[in-house]
Length: 163
Image 1: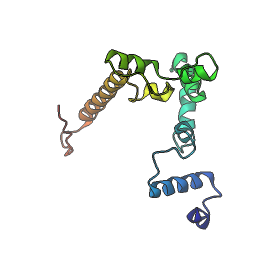
Image 2: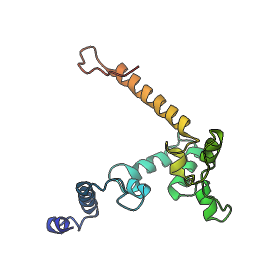
Image 3: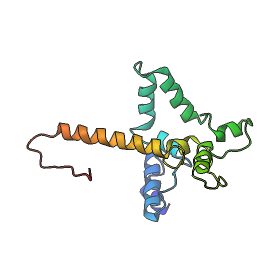
Image 4: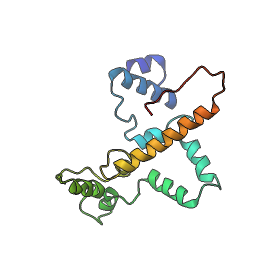
């Protein structure tokens, strides 16, 4: 904080945020969001977040269902167990997909993680792990093929994969 005050970066929000991120990195504390949530960090990120979302939401080529889903995710009202419990329509916030996956392999369903939008869309959900992994591999293969197709014969860069 002393560095921030000495450099006068506290006056400008962006410079203050950059100083905080640098200070957190120096302390080794970069696994937690700077603004309290990862969503807030993304929305407040320079040259990416709000302008990108605005373009996406205003694009007539993007289907309404995709826009609606994005707006629900940003607002935090995706109908997952945590939100349903918040509006008092469910008492248990544990992930139904994780419970089902654990039951299928005979493991204990106790201490299942909370069912949140980030949990289901990440690789942390036992029930979605194979789907998320398959999507990741599909995207990687597509990117790899696109990079290979864009290379010129004189390119010295070669991609080597285990495949």
